[in-house]
Length: 614
Image 1 (cartoon, rainbow, N blue to C red):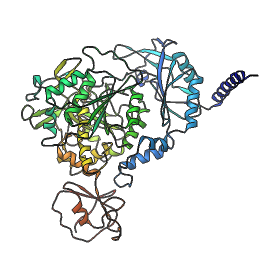
Image 2 (cartoon, rainbow, N blue to C red):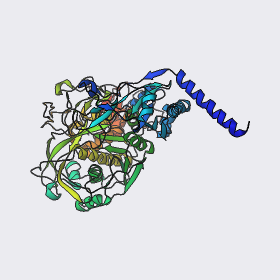
Image 3 (cartoon, one colour):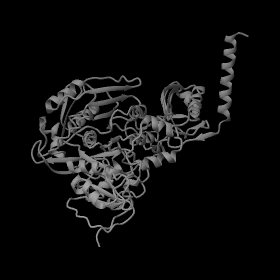
Image 4 (spheres, rainbow, N blue to C red):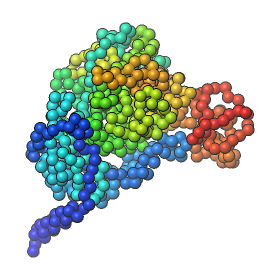
């Protein structure tokens, strides 16, 4: 028997072995793949998806030691923890929590044995991208791919008839893109809006360029220098549109870097690229000193966001494209967002332009608890391009309790959600807001809109703002501020709130079907905590990240640096070290020393309140 014959026999035996292993594996049934709308509206199939149709899917594996993963994420955002803001690299996260090589190879073998072509692998073993025919997909996952008439959009969508099951013992988290009830795409509609009485300096009175900085960052010289922003895109754009916007607004030219994920070649025709053009223009407007704007463009949302996380090129990222708003939450996104948070990245998503999330109205919603979700406002300035005068809620601002049933996150605890119509068991949206109406933008190879609107404007503005905040942190030798929600909610429930935010108390996000939430004092389901109030917010966030620690029982002969590990031993040392408006955290203990305090600051005990005075 020659070598060629031996190789053929060995290959055949290996295929048989894989088939036997697959057959012997314990089958597992997944959840969350049949769109809820099918059951809610009792939709009947209009037919079967043709067997020869090819689909691109992503199979996500469960993390190794998921409880430790979740605990570490919480510790990185707990000021009482020595892990606070000690960011990890993507490689460190993969080494700690990525599925093992053996499990990943078993998944690859399962895919290939079932006729699926592997199109992308991940070094951390969390995702496997595959392509296959509907016929092979149905056999691999024991489903029938049905076609339904979309109840709203006047098109069809496909989905499995039952939840998929796999003859594979390796624990699978989710199979992405097995249904396309709501295809991700333009999340904010970019609709014409009504001009304000006083607006911006752009043509037609629309807000443009420095107008947003004059309103939200008056007299702030920080401009995002040394920082980069990364934007998700499902479109191509005309670079001349960005250059035209910069010239019209008097902005400097910021370097753009396009990163294409997989095969991505959508048509670029006159009038196209409106969404991503807005995202680029807004990020530059708020942070004109950016070193670079990265545009991650891909036809598959999950693969693209994963590359944004693993590349780790920017500490502020944003999307205005609805990535997973199909009422069957794609939980493959959640570990990626959490990994971004572990890397010190701030990720922003537009809340959508459909108004209140309630009942059957969930158009364009975004509710992941691991991103900062941005709503919209109507802005009024003292004069065109002048100082902030007032704001009201923009009626299209998406908000409400989580339609996909994400549980109540720890950072929303302590807020009376019942009083504002929110949920006490589910995540509530949005977190913050910024102007989303009466906006000027260029797109589509020389086209302009003078009075445009949508949370697609407010979201990249927050990404640009965070670049400014991280510039301030870097100037003070501090790490990036990371996932903002724990910080934002801590500020919102503290004495710093009034100086950090413009509290929006007027307006609502009423919809035509009667769903409505109202802007009110403090947090609400239209504008979140409100909009940025200049250096007040910048200092509050950076100070929160650099709190001074005091432990009255700490040995006086040990290093005293004011950190968690090496705290000061007297309150006087803390008062001297903390900046105006800063925070002092006291470890358990007490002291009878009298200290003079002549500047505003917050003093609290780790995990509770501090008692001062007799």
